[in-house]
Image 1 (cartoon, rainbow over the protein chains, first blue to last red):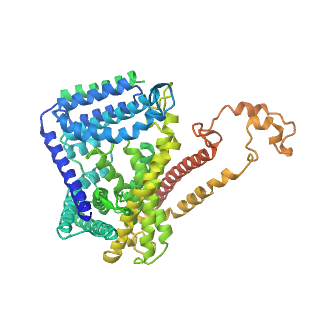
Image 2 (cartoon, chains in turn brown, green):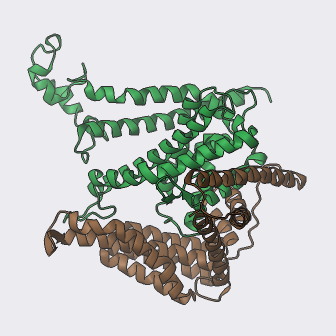
Image 3 (cartoon, rainbow over the protein chains, first blue to last red):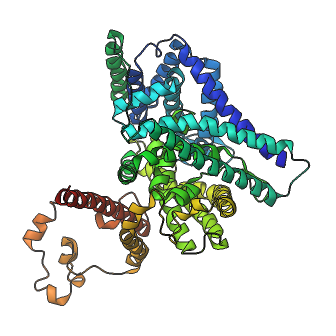
Length: 269
Length: 337
C-alpha cells in the first residue's frame, strides 16, 4: 500500500512532464494556428471560448465544437491524443455530473428507464453541459498545444494582464518542473528504501514530511532566485520583451475568429 | 465570478506591490509552483483511501492571506491553462472559491485557533488541521452555491437549465459530502503534517503569521492594518442570523402595501392609515437588487437573507478597500517627499 501511494504520486509527476514535452512538440509543427501571431491566437481562441459559454442552443455549441475539432485538425494536433486526453476525460468527469440531470430535471417525459423518467429538458441540459465543456476545453487545448508557453504568457500581455502577474506565471512554470523533478527524486529514494507495508499514520507522516521538505527547499530556492535577480540589477520593474509582428494573415484571421464567435452567439440565442 | 475574483486579485496585488516587490515575485512564484506540486501528491487517508490536497492552508500560514491568494491563483491558472485540468471560463470561479475564500478562511481560522500559542506548540498543529478542513469546505460550499443558483438564473423558456442543472438542494449535498469527508481530510492531514514538520525543522517559516513575534512576514504587515475591518466584518457576519429571528417590520421602513394595512403601522405613525401619494410615487423609482432581502430565485427566505448579507458584506468590503486607497493616496500627496 505504501509503495502504491509512492508510485502513484511519482507517476502523476511523470505524466505532467510528458504532457509538457508533448505540447512543445505540437507547437513546433507547421499548422494553421501555429502560423498565427500568438496574440491573435490567444485573443481569437478565447473569444470562441466566451462564445461557447454564451450560446444557449445545443446546435450552436455543437457547431463551435466542430470548429474546434477542425482547427485542431488543420493545426496538425494528433486527434487520437486529443480524444484520449481531452474528450474522453471531459466526458467521464462531466458525464458523471450531467447524468443524473437526465432523470431529475422536470419536464416532458420522452422515455422511461426502470422507474425513472427521462425528460426532454433533462436530455438537453445534460447535452448542453457536456458539449459546452468539450468545446471550451478543446479550444483551450488547441491554443496551449500549438503555442509555446512563453509565447502564451507574452500574448497574455495583450489582454492587459499586469506585467507582475505575467512574470510570476512565467517563473512559476519554470520552477514547477524543477520542483516536480525534486519531488519525484524524493519519492523514488523513499520507495527504494521502503520494504513491506507501513501503517496508515506513518504513510501520512511520510507524505507530510516530504511536502514539508519540499516547502523548505522552495523557500530556500526563492531566496536564491531573489539574490540572482538582485545581482542582475532587478529593481521591481518587470520588462517583457515582445518580438511579435502582425502579418496580413493575422489581420485577416482575427476578424474571422470574431465573426465566427459573433455568429455562434447570434444563432445560439 | 471573474469580477468577484478580480477584486481580490487587485487588492492582494496592490498590497504586495507596497511590500518589497523584488522579494515578493520570486517568493510567490516558487510558492505557486510548490502548491501546484502538492496538489499532485496522492495522500493516504484514514480508511484506506487516498485524496488530493489544495495546499491553500499552508500557503496562508507561511505567506499570509494576500500572498496565498496570489500563489494559489497562479497555481490554479497554470493548472487550467497549461495542463488543461480546468476550463478557462471557470478560472475566475475556481480562483474565487479556492484561492480567495480558501486563503481567507484558512488564515482567519488558523489565527483564531492558534491565538498566541508558542511556535512549537501542539495547538498550532491542530489549528492548521482545522483551518485546512474549514478552508476546503468553505471553498466547496461557495462552489455549491454557485452551481445551485444557476438553474434558477439561467434557463430557457422550456425550463431547460442552460448551465449547471442542479438546484441548491441537490448541489450542496453533492459537493459537500465529498469535501466534508475526503477532500477536507486530505487538506487537514497535509496542513497539520507540514506545520508539525516545520516546527521541528524550520520554525522561521511559521513566524510571519504567528502574531507573537515582532518580525512580520513579507505579506502580513498590510493585513495587520486591516485587522479592525476584519473584526467588524466577522461580527457583522455572525450577527446576520439574528435578523432571521427578528419578527415584524422595521420602524419607518414600511412599504406602501404595509402602510395601507393599518395593523402593520404603530398608532403614532398612522393618523389616517392611508398611503401618502408621495410615497406611492417614489416607491416605483427604485427597486432594490435583492427585494425584501431575499432574491426571487431563492425559495427559502432565511437562505436568501444569508445570501443577501454575504452580497452586502462583499459590497462593503470593496467600498472600504476603495476608500482606504483614496485616503492613502491623499496622505501620500500630503506628506513631504
